[in-house]
Length: 228
Image 1: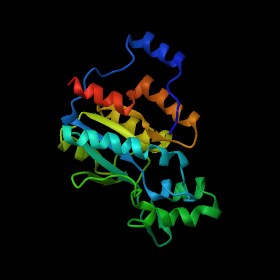
Image 2 (image 1 turned 45 degrees about the vertical axis):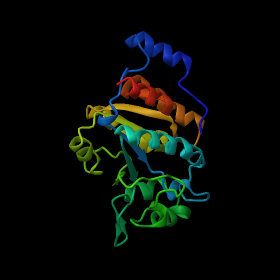
Image 3 (image 1 turned 60 degrees about the vertical axis):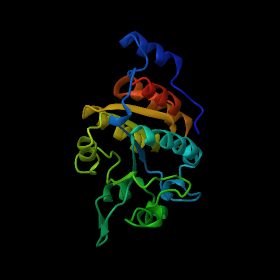
Image 4 (image 1 turned 30 degrees about the horizontal axis):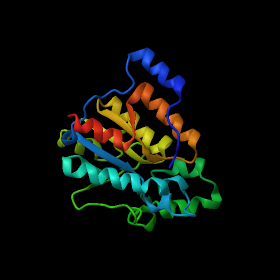
């Protein structure tokens, strides 16, 4: 887990701009969803092609928060990233051919295949039968055409989107930005997110708190819900 928070000068900037640090005094759990992104073997396993070692350190925090949220009406959503490859082509060719070295490209493609071991949730995660599972095919689960997440959130009258998972600064931040632009209220749950470094993790927290939503720990989320 990353033992970092938003830096004091950024907090001061936020306070000067809007007169308060946290955006939400109350969060209605019945209109909230805890969206957990890419906590799958492809990112979790030691030696996996897209391994994020810190992601294994947030499993307990995610399990604990999800277990507290379900009984009070908050939905838990698990997002993974299967990529269809056909005839030597895929919808992610731009990524594969530009950002992935040839030496690990095939392993990355295999770990991205729908139904593959790489796409399975990390076994230490505690998933309940009522949880929702959503595949996406872009960094953001809310960019047009990437998934059914927006439709699902709208159908359940969700207003608050709590975000956890990995990487903090890639798929989690991309989803948070799009959630705000779609008029959802966003909370980045900082002890339920992981990146490849403390600096990358903190950069996202600071981006979000200034422009896209709130930043809270899991305990702070629950305390805010209790006031609703």
